[in-house]
Length: 187
Image (tube, rainbow, N blue to C red; front, side):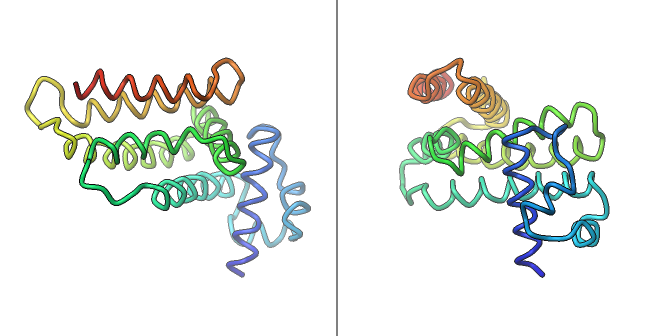
C-alpha cells in the first residue's frame, strides 16, 4: 500500500505543478496514479487531506534532494550557501517541487488546514537555515538574530524561485542574488 500511496502523491505533485491546485481533481490524480478514487479517499479522506499530504510530500522531497547534495564541510557558510542554492536547480524534480510548493503556498491563503501545515513546514525550514546562519557566524543577541537572517534568506529564495519558474528571472541571476544576499547578511 505504501507504494500506491507514494504513487498517488507523486501524481498529485505533478498535476499541481502542471495545472495548479485549483485544477487538481481527485479522479484525474487516480487515473494518473493508476489507482481508484476509493483508494485515494481511503488514504487521504478527502481532497483537503490529499493536499495536506502532498504538501508534506513536497517538503520531504526537498529535504531529500538538499540533504543528499550538501557536502560535509567545516565551512558553515559554504554549507549555508549550498543549501539555499539547491532550491534553485534546473532539474525536473526541483522545478516540479518548487512549482507545486508555490501553488500550495498560494492556496494556503484560502485554506486554513493547508495554511497551518505550510506554516509548520516553513518554521522548520527557517529553523534549519537559522542553525546554519548561526554556525556561519551570526550570533544570537547581535545586531541581527540568526532567525531573522534565516527568515529573510528563505523568503528571498522562495520569491526568486517563483520569478525563475515564471520566466521573469534567469536562474543564474537568481543564484547570484542569493549569493549576494548571503554576503550582505553575513558580511
